[in-house]
Image: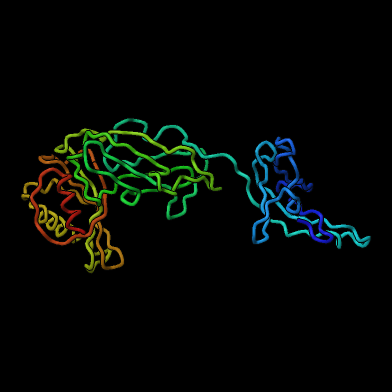
Length: 331
């Protein structure tokens, strides 16, 4: 693979900050078929040249080069003509990169550690090193609720990837029936789901996890008649200001009562936080729907969401059904 004066094309490397350059090594079979270590020489007869004239070689890293940040360069060596040294060689510009051979792994157990969780409670998987979290996410995520037809892929979940963790919860706007899933066990799988998938969890340097992350938990079997639900209620296209927005509280309360067809005696089931005016044309408040026959105390909150609404009446009793109907009206 040499031509005229060209004799060698060598790969050199050094750890960032070092002055000394080392020769990269590769492994080939000798005449007896045994592996032997040789220098990475793209002009050697053991280099692989494509039909287009490009030569590629594998750089042996394991047990030869430690992980870290390195600089690399290519230098050619030619027959000497007896003149200045620089006419007998050529060197490329130096480029830098990271050598990372460690695969990411799950760190500890999925959080929260207890086996039962609330619908809408965040689940978190922590890994041993920072992940590639740019969107679109590179990994598959699937939740299957046993004993039901519910199967949720990543696009139907609320997913956060930050640093070393992947957090997620079931999106409450997908229309799940709470009464069907309470007390049910569900399984979670993260990584490459399905034989045809090209997805996976990668660390920041592109190393994939070796095995999918799999675990199971159970939705808490709670009494819905004792549960409360909390969400953000939005009134759009309504003129407001910081000085006048508070006067709309009674109107918002009456509107929600009308939508839910609640009796006036049930108005203590609806609790509003102070109303806020945004951009002069949108009113927002956090609404909590308390359990039936409540005395104003809080129930166990199951979920949160963001709503804008149109008018229509509904028939419902426990707070989760009321929330579901308001959610449907907002879409």
